[in-house]
Length: 216
Image 1 (cartoon, helix red, strand yellow):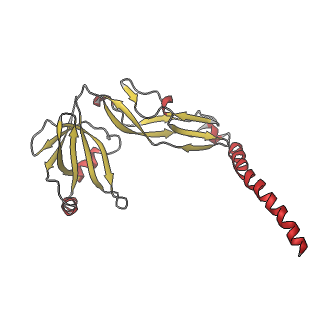
Image 2 (cartoon, rainbow, N blue to C red):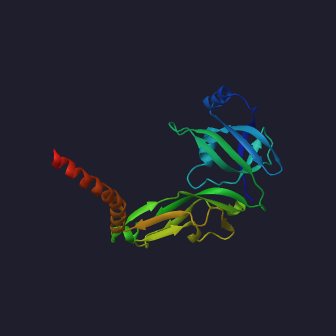
Image 3 (cartoon, one colour):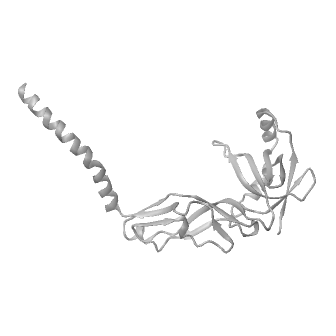
């Protein structure tokens, strides 16, 4: 399998102030782990990570060159960003080999304007933006994209409904809802049904209050 080299430096697991020092120097604290490998604490260049995580490159297959030594195949398994600055604050690298499937979190992208919204007045709601998939490294899709232009109202699309690429299997719950298109009338009916018990409960209270008001 073809790998992209990413330079990394080993580090001693330390206090938060050490991690802050690394980030200030343009380095991101990270960890490399996997089956048959001891966990290694490393740091990588924030500039290099931005290149690796550019659009369409989430699952670039990497060779981590740790302290100048190559031969550490990996994918970015997870990462954390600062909630305010959106800068990367930590990276998880997962060891891979070309024969062993790995579980990865892949984004779901919906494209197109559904018929159910455009001409039938429906409401689109995307419930899930990522799915867990299992695949060998070379088969990991960058994104799961679905054209929803032809979908009408009163439709619910589940994770199990995706046609996955060859060699890729679903690792999320099959009935995970990806999106739904509901008609406005159904939404109104649901709202009316929810309001009905409250109205029924209020009626006896109002009736009981009426005689008391009259006696005054």
